[in-house]
Length: 69
Image (cartoon, one colour):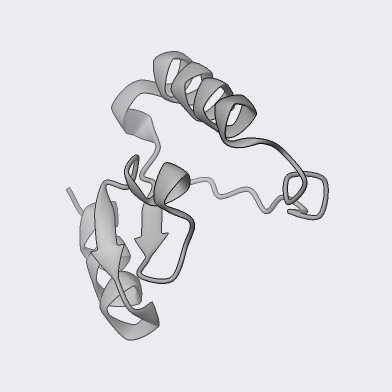
């Protein structure tokens, strides 16, 4: 499974509408080949797109399970 790391600094100042549009476009382009992880303290406009949610330990376990599917 290929993974990519991105720098988040350029995304922090984005308005909610801009985040919504970018996430929706990425999901449309990538489909189910990408898994969006939502940490419980993330902004609500980001969190609502998450495929998997929880704290750091729970997310690491869940993400590890998706790789084998």
